[in-house]
Length: 305
Image (cartoon, rainbow, N blue to C red; front, side, top):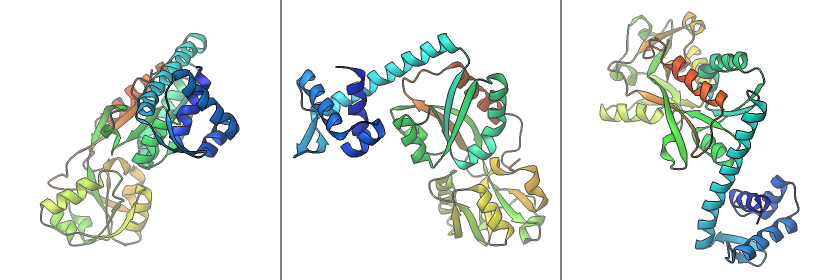
């Protein structure tokens, strides 16, 4: 038994038991992949996969236990490699971060800039996606750290840490009837067409729940995954925007009025996640600390600044 066989097994499972897809990712041949898996089964004395002809159709009960152990072994092998890199290369390496648009656009830039100054030999690779895509990237080994507001703390195989809290706010053009107000209630907002997030992003479920608990049925005319897209359509007069307070910059206030929602909607917690058991290198720990520091700096997040 060797690490290559274990990697072949793991990738086959990750690719939905599609040997062709797994072989392409592993840069090997399908027959070679099949042979390696059969040899591993022979060495272990168990049948890992249910087969129909040459096709793999499911994991056996023994196979599920083997897969869990293999994932753990490969994670520890990766940790050993990361430890050796710390010993050998110190503050050099690659940091792969997966984040939603709001986090990538508004929370990460000053922290990444600080990281580059402190660790100039670290290359940052930034991937954007939905919370579910971020979870998949963490599990698949395409990302070391994942940052999002939704979904990250619902998976036992991921370790998460809270970074900071924030609130939603309302935005309207300067000519809108609400623009002269200091704040807006849910009843005020329900009287206008609304533009806000897709259901999977940025606390949208809390928005829906708050309106429902207030006995209100808002008219949502556009949903988007990107706060900048929402702001664009608000400027065009499509409706009142409901967005994360993180996504408001000083340049937005020239054309938009930013209104706290009173009473405030429930706060949202942005979290960072990584695979449970994953050894964090020094620059990863530094990034987490700096995100917490930046996110908790004095700011009126309910009002969006």
